[in-house]
Length: 187
Image 1 (spheres, helix red, strand yellow):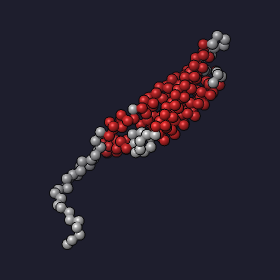
Image 2 (tube, rainbow, N blue to C red):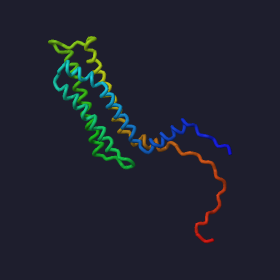
Image 3 (cartoon, rainbow, N blue to C red):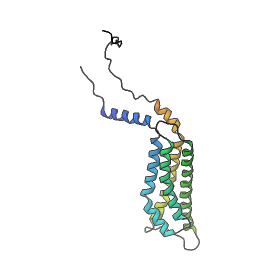
Image 4 (tube, one colour):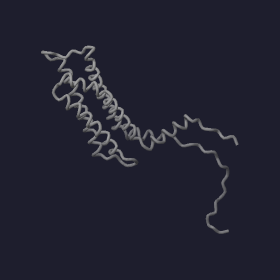
């Protein structure tokens, strides 16, 4: 009775695929989480930039980005319930929040550029104010990550069907010829 032990890495990969097939909505949720975490980790540069430039609506744009990022995470959780059809009003609300976040990032980036291009007392990025460049780059990357997340949400039905086509079943050894089972209860 030579039983072949399955490869542990292959088995772990198979289990991962099985869970992903059951919950494909985790893909955009993870992307949204990473987008939020990226913005949160760079919040120090954004706050320092707001304090240095003090442009119109910069603080409001940063606040709106944080608020709607957290709310969009909750909205994404409610938009795709487990093993049920997507809740369309929540998906629409999720995209509205994506637009608000993108608009807030765009407003903040324009405030940075306007402060660098103003005629009197323009902001110059030096080694002491390099955080302004970091904040601008963070916002640009955040917008790209947000677009990727929006595309992942929009294409969820497509890759859900593709994931379901992946074979994750285990081949079981043949138990030999099984005879007929009598369930009548008569002896």
